[in-house]
Length: 137
Image 1 (cartoon, rainbow, N blue to C red):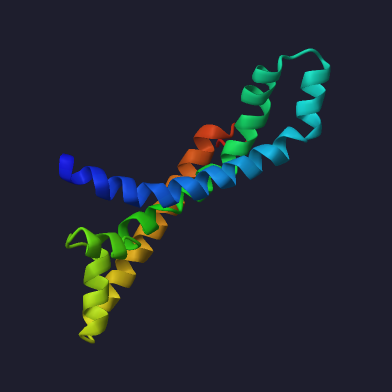
Image 2 (cartoon, rainbow, N blue to C red):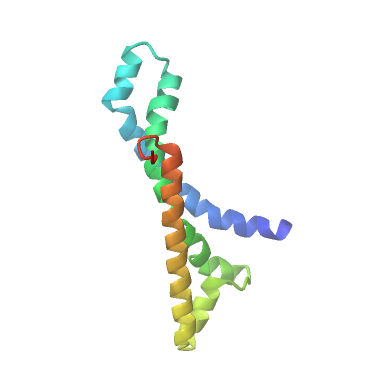
């Protein structure tokens, strides 16, 4: 487990920064919305208005953004795989391109497409769980 600590930190640090920046912008947009100001004007506490009105609506686009990052986790770790000497999909992709291996390149692209489709399915499921307006009846 101690060998997984540094690669996990290096892979998640960049993603964490972009996710937090995106969530911050979504929250700033949502906090200025009419329904949050109306809830505050009706006497709802600030924390409760943020949790129940603003955060609930700001998480919906974030779920989509996060779910489509699934493909990036599996295929986009080429540099980290080289630094930590891991044999993964990213290093296999670079190796197959360098060796003109068409079948290997096609396999990596197909796996990337499968990861993207999985991310899209995960995104739809997360949005259905989070947003009650989307649930099928």
